[in-house]
Image (tube, rainbow, N blue to C red):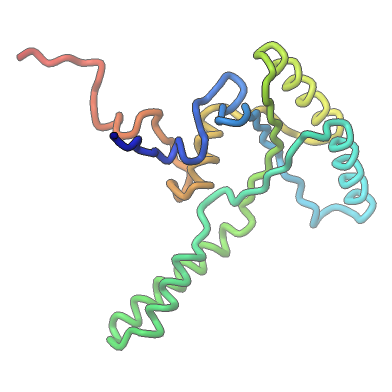
Length: 192
């Protein structure tokens, strides 16, 4: 009996992109990108108002989920590795290079530490496309009415978010639908 090979896509339950977001083996998920608010410049009263608006939004749409991600890759595991190498390395030249790498990673992480991405998501278990369309529009309207600047994420934005989350992209560059397709010109046939 032949064993079925598991792909990463199969292991995480991802099936396909849809008109509204992504389809997994358990649900269809629509994502909304939320423009963050710099609360460090707001008064305490304005912060309380923002919190109240978020509470009202979540009570209006209780199935709404909040996602907060780094908008670029985190370098913690790289820094841990370099630090461990520094402790065991005896060659002074290599130690200087490792220290320079550690400083560089620390500097990059400090620059990117404020680069966060915020999203709302909503899951659909058994709804038909028309029902999903209506709910997505209602959610979009409710988000706006409660004072949040948000928009439904496009396929490239969802791909970028997934690439950053799963560590396949450092900066979130565009990922092709078919791995390796950029290496072939599939539209041109060669005469033999």
